[in-house]
Structure formats: structure tokens, C-alpha cells
Length: 165
Image (cartoon, rainbow, N blue to C red; front, side, top):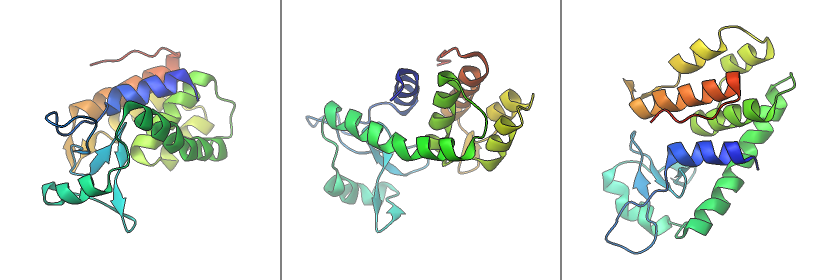
């Protein structure tokens, strides 16, 4: 797995440790209320996201990531399907930086057919579009998402991995 991709995702996801009073890693809620563990792995039960403070005990009971090594292994595993989606949907040759930016975006957002179209047509509007979409949580613009989108767009367009926070 590419080092820029791992560095980018791990920087913006952060290593989740929801309870600093307890040894090891614990699940943590993301800004939109979804329980996550490790480097941003969304927790599910029955195919649905575990959400909300009322489901803390459920999230803790389903926890599988307890160490940094577990988190690193899970991240590589979690990125693979998004790499396959990028490989399938992008019809032009990408360099390593462009690939890393797209896989990071897809991992965080689930993907965008509009972004794929912009990439495949080599649109001049990629940077502006990238920085202005998928930046909200529950309809509210989130600073962390804005910075992540800017970092991804910069990586895609220039090859430079520069963290803006």
C-alpha cells in the first residue's frame, strides 16, 4: 500500500482512543455520530452504522481493534476495496499521488461519480470541485473535512502531500 495514502488517511482519521482512562484503544464517535475504531473504521451491526451516544456500550462490545498494530492492519484491509473502485472507475493513467488522493477521498466519502467524470475527462475544474464538495456532516460544513478535501486536491493536482491543519 502506498505510503502517501497511508500517511494521508491516518493523519485525517486520527488513531481513535475514545476513553483515555482505559489502557489500549477504544471506539470513538466521529463528528456525525458514527462509532469508529482504529484509523476510522466505521462500526456496524446488521449492516447498519452504530450511531449515537446511546450506543456506546454496543460499540465497545463489538470492538475488534485494540492495538496500534490491529489498527494498521485494519486500515490496509479497509483501503483495498476503495483501491479496486478507483481502478475500475478511472479510465486514465494515474500517478501514485493522484491514486492516493482518490483512494483517500473514496475511503472517506464512499466515492463520487462526478469526481470520476472530472478525472476521466481531465477537467480543469477538479481542484475547485474537490475542495467544495463532501465537506459537510449533517449539513454543517466541518473544518476537518474542508482541510482534508484541500489536502487531497493538492496531492492530486501537484503531487505534494501537505497537511493544512
